Amino acid sequence: MTNLAPPPATSGKSLLERVEDALLPLINLVFLLLMFFIVAGQLANEPLPDLPATTASGQEQTPDADLKVTGDGRWLIGSSTVDAETLLARLPEHSAGQSLRVAADESVSMAELERLFRILESGGYSEVLLLTEPGA
Image (cartoon, rainbow, N blue to C red; front, side, top):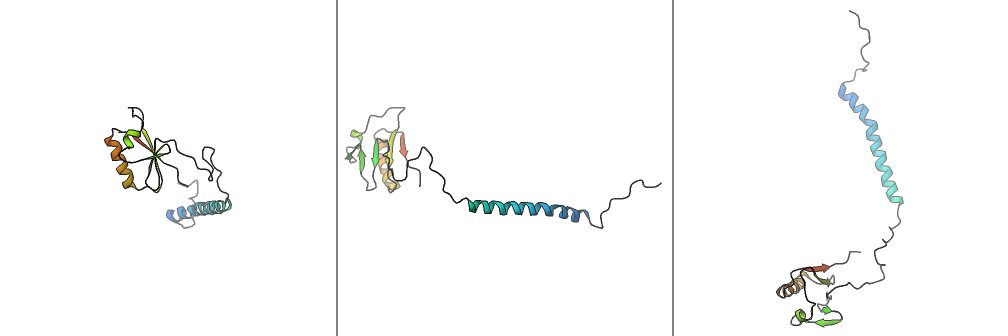
């Protein structure tokens, strides 16, 4: 019986060698894409614009809070300073659906906040909302 089609030309290479030869262009393409994105990332040196909802960096906005804790450890309700003895009497009445809003300066330690939260808990404030400011 005679062969109708000649055997495939493999030029003497094994299957593994032929697969390696086929992967080389793919590796080159991935390398070129990587280099393109590295260069394109360096070219875009413009800072991102401010989002419409954020305040400008020079403006300072006072938070809408029931209680403010300043950096030097003072507690403010409105614009008047209160101490631990008069705090609970000066705070607004708490309701089941309403949380007490507390704004604390970034320099206030966690120990100071824990002391404040213990006083608030003893006064019946079970839900406290700590207002934070996004980092710059």
